[in-house]
Length: 431
Image 1 (cartoon, rainbow, N blue to C red):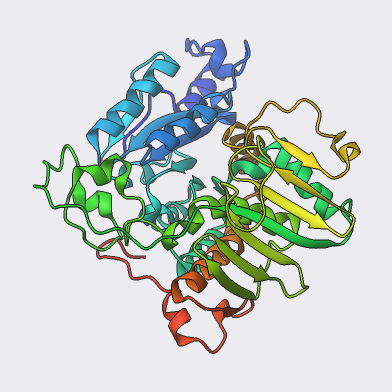
Image 2 (cartoon, one colour):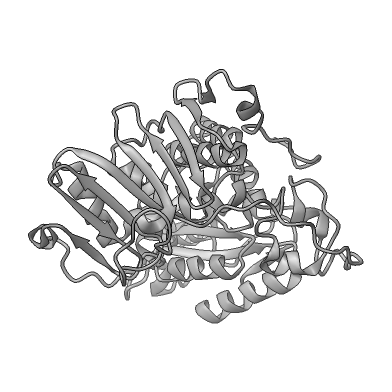
């Protein structure tokens, strides 16, 4: 039997019908949309899958939206799901948030319209595909895929099932980054020559953590936590965030961690959302050069400023720089933006949204759930932007230049590179 919520939309419609027939049903003003409330019939009902620290920050962005109601959390860790329930119940002033240890509890509910997926990298694509098949719209944290194959599978399934998908690469919704990309797109910098993306230093995967006895599945269900990833012996530290940079749990040697944000912005500024660079050459652990078919260069360099060139101090993390033959612009997370011509910044206005704040991105997603228009970071944007991340990382891993064909989405005459495109899911977490 599917779980029911206390005041879902079906019950609202039944109550409204009863009132129309003269039956003595009392409907509160909040249900009718008065007193600043949004009627349930116009409210987007949200469930969560795997909400850790970042997921709970994004959830706060959803809490701020009056036309959205969060009602259920699925997480294989009891501590996490209980924490999310406590925050949700406190926010709404009730005890209605339902908890599950398996995402099927959320996905099987026909009263849930959309899901927030903020698991680790290993689950992002697979959980999103499960959600799309269940008819849910999806807001998913980044990186949204583990490799090139998953980029393809994710976009293919989202489009097949006609779902709304928003990647958590929220900087496309932040005003200073929007202005910077707009200057490049509109020719205000002249002909675009280079786009620069701040990245983390690449490094090989870490050795597995020492094995510990597996806990009671009611406390941490280790098999469900791993999901489609290869089996790794249990260590509690993985569940506390130390899964990063471990093979099978983390994607592409650290490059997508920030590159999924900054390369995404470079793709946007270069008008390249439907393609990728065609050549990639890793110069070092902190510098990769790439080139689009039209000659524009994509330069991925260490965000700290070491390596090729320096970033402007004080603009913030995840910096990007767009360079044309008539000027340049640079932006970062701390509301920062500078350009060769300060007059170009007149349109920024009073920007109080930092690059890490998801609230405007959440709003874009909810609006698109209603209109069925594409969000700014939809699955096709993810497909090409993430593929560029993975192609660059593969060049680094192989220690040589690689050529990539955006049409076939494969490396040209390079079996070794193409073998790194694919992904095998652990049963039963297959698609």
